[in-house]
Length: 326
Ligand code: ADE
Ligand code: ZN
Image (cartoon, rainbow, N blue to C red; front, top):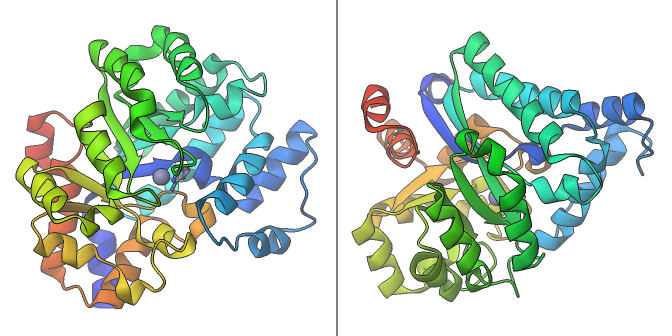
């Protein structure tokens, strides 16, 4: 349709994408074969059938198990190359992608192989698609502060290739305050800061991300809408929220996309953006997320253009590059 073509043609940035969450079942099988790794599925259909989640932890258990097929620098390159190809086809011109080094270093994969493979694909995406990209290194919040510090130390030789640190994995019981010191250390090294907050966790976790972590963006932020003072704070600061509609549906953050708050966020003056989170697990890439939310909430072209504009103003691109995309 006309709106489909408009969405695909709309230049956009993707700001919330876990590269491990872009591992499609067919690549999972191919890498399992290439690396001689056993996977608990007989077919791609069986994999897809397993992607039925009641909450965030249900998903994370399957997501970490799937990542076990990723072993070599070439695997990380192929994973990211497949993502960049799909993103380019969706009209993404800039992508700030998260990776979870601890998921891999805990299995004995060298940090260097993970990041060099991703950097290979990023250079290739620039060459083949003219797409710019940046890396966000996410700490797993179910692990300790000490392990996050060790990961930051491992990243030291590549800090010029990392734009920001992030915070992901099991939110409930792992509040932002647990990582206040490591985020301060990352800021001191010149890194930008983002954190998942208010996906399953309460509004207090969003306050903590702002006041204790001093984040530059909030990933998700849905539950901020439960707290009027927090809404006012986010709006006053012009804080970008990286919202992920299909993720919210699949992880039961919303019961139905028809009840999704994306347009409500815009009406409240919040800088909401649309992102795919873990597209291989949640049923769609970024344009699918724009399409789904447009259909479910009756968004028009102006709304969609505003969301795409927010993706650039909320990005970590230099100001002249942001201006060039507006
Ligand atoms: N890791 C990958 N996707 C995630 C999400 N949506 N929330 C928390 N951790 C994640
Ligand atoms: Zn996420």
